[in-house]
Amino acid sequence: MAISEKGLQQLQESLSAETKSSAGDKHETGRAMIQLEREQLGNQLANIEAEKEIILKIDPSSKSQIIGLGAVVLTSQHHYFIATSIGKIRLNNTDYYALSLGSPIGQLLSGKRAGDKFVFRNQEIEILEVL
Image 1 (cartoon, one colour):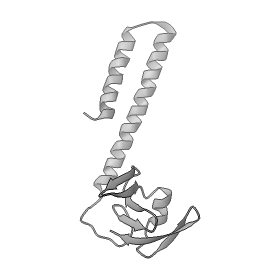
Image 2 (cartoon, rainbow, N blue to C red):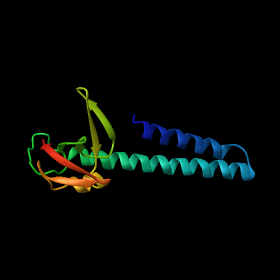
Image 3 (cartoon, helix red, strand yellow):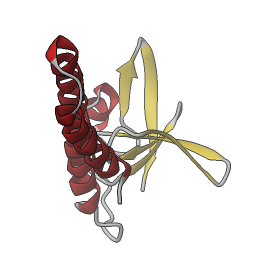
Image 4 (cartoon, rainbow, N blue to C red):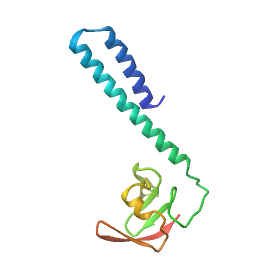
């Protein structure tokens, strides 16, 4: 069972137990806090599912010279994997930054090719290779 799903199950159990316990304001405050936590876990689960759907759209056998979803981009500054914004990935002693097309750098990279340049934070960055 996934962590978020397990958390939701535990919160539901706490909510049921809270209903059976103390009375008055303490009871209502406890229920409200559990409900808030439940909503937050539900949102996290929805975000995870949305990111999973994006990743499932990537065709690893697809080769394109234009930067889009699923591209690995080598630049003069960093290496990027265009998918979802999950941060740094280390593979074979090389760091790759997984980011979405909606991120600031993702927007700058989208549609570009090897040899193109873009400016980010007042630095000119060259796209060396698109895999």
